[in-house]
Image (tube, rainbow, N blue to C red; front, side):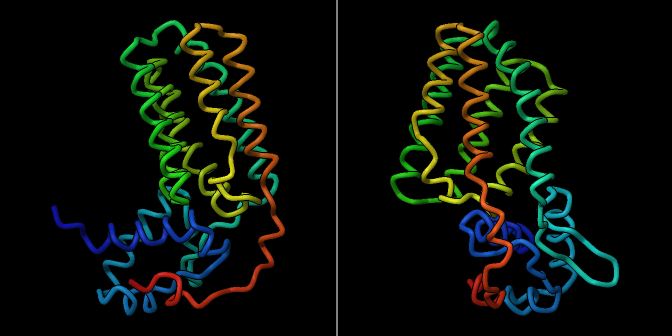
Amino acid sequence: MKISIEDRIEQRVLEAIAERRLPPGAKLGEQLLSDIFTCNRANVRRALASLAAQNVVDLIPNRGAFVISPSPRDAKDVFQARRAIERTIVTAACDHATDTDLSALADIIANEDAARDAGDETQILRLSSEFHLRIADVAGNSVLTRFLTDLTMRSALIIGLYGHNGPSHCDRGEHRRILAALAARDKAQLIAEMERHLSHLEADLDFSRLSEKQVPLEEILQP
């Protein structure tokens, strides 16, 4: 199926953020984006509206669209919320996980390892989020899953923007230890592994990247 121009714009922006080429606060001008992607401004506006709904860009009246610039406090709040929600999720997942669920999680980890070996930052972040959301599906609480979907999007963006070493340097054993504790139905160990994992992700954030040199948008997003 042919990808729409709006989806192409969204995908390119998300990839540029995940690969740390598009910095926080960067302006996403409608006319410049329409020139880069050879489309009309209505296409651009729809793409930007979708990105805003995903908490990826801020739409500021009379100023335009900008890549969000989460503050250290924003990051702290996001990870604090994730700890609280994922503690409940993994506890419930212990009671519901099947062999099929465990196998699916193992497959995600294998794909994540392959992406890490290839240095594919975008895929690493996507698969990491998928791992956490799959556990939420296993837990069976649709309300918590919706909350976590929003939080994983926000934290993936924060990691993509401010991760000191980048997602490819995250300890590849952490997800495996989470899965091992889930398979063993060890709730205390599972909670400890999840909280340790989230703490490591938060500790790796480097907000000094706010001052990095800006690169022209056309150089970043040019097809």
